[in-house]
Length: 166
Image (cartoon, rainbow, N blue to C red; front, side, top):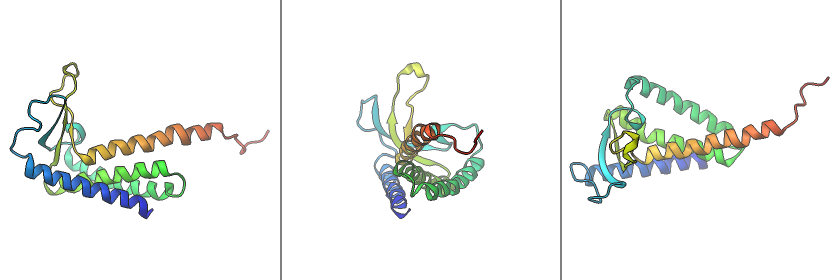
């Protein structure tokens, strides 16, 4: 389990390091590179939950996030000896959680700085803007859920049911 927690720690260090850099180099300045529309580095403070959604009060989001860390640690403990894919996925999700939750609790917002602009037909202006922790959560979810649905779920379908005999 320690090797997976080291992945989590690496993500947290990278996330907090890049956020610190963004505060020093991007806050109060024009986005970089200037004039680019699809991708740019642009300082933003996110006072809401993922993708700046605000339909759940932040105290509840913070409480659920802290509870989720306990669940993630339990799942990581359960999967650690079974398969590497869900374990790495869970380590990434934990890294993202430990990257964003302390910021929300201490500052009241999360620093975002990676900005991607989707076509205007999606009715958004400059969306999404995110950080390393957000990326880690998304990559981790793909790895973990991909394993659960496509490997573990398929394995259960293919194994014969030996519990009931006629």
